[in-house]
Image (cartoon, one colour):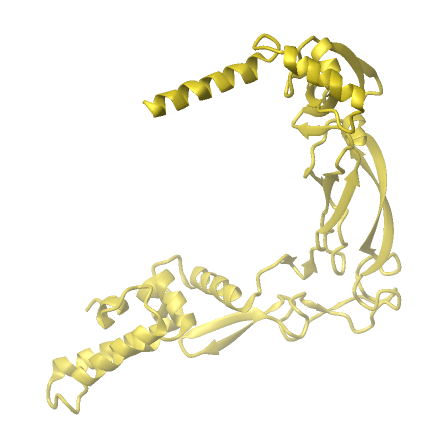
Length: 373
């Protein structure tokens, strides 16, 4: 007879927590208990079914196996038939318990991969513009030269672990399950070092400061991550090295703000220069000085484009642009004579000299007149 789904047996949802499971079980167990139903074979079968369902789902490990494989997880002494044979099921169960006990990682065949390293590098906007090669000093672990990374004293060699037979894993039976775990005798490496290297004390690596050259390409952007493969920590006992990741940041610039390949600069000009016209000079990241002409009547916010004076675009021959934005500076700390001149100018000004403000207040007047009607 085909078994019913355990969640269906208890009448709970598949995401039910332990409290809900326990409550459902108690209710059904009392309903179908043999003492309450003497001589009722159907009630006895239901009681056994409910008990079996609860025994499985209340255990996190069994529940995980059931959710993944269904009733097949507990057939044939704990090995699922019909899913590729005992070997496949045991492997799958090992994956489940690896998740529970944190046994997954970078270990392969007893050789631990070295950790990845992070290095924060700050450069100037000028350096990002031109590109450069910088040298950095990174504290890291390297393969021990004395034992060539084996961890064993020169002249000796690691021996096969007697507990796991060199596999790095041991099996233990617990009820329905056959658990496979990391061998504690050799820490999953499959080998034991009885005579460790005197320089690295059996680790197969030593900590040193390394000097590395890093190429910073022209046009690189803030937040770029540069990966140097194999430049991280050396692996334990001859394992592969990790990688080094360089996280790049660009210092704020005194004049320019960057947006992709374009640069922006705000330049204050005097009220008279903006009114009468004039010119000013601005530097570029390329070392040039560019002259910007200010036409008569320039307003705050006016932008002037310097084509090709922005940042390089990485891996191309293109250049962004530089945008110079003008802000008109209102004069302060005026002398008496300057105040008199400005007052005379204000008396003689009209809508022609201040078209924007004159037009705005004319619209305000029309709006107020409309409200008054």
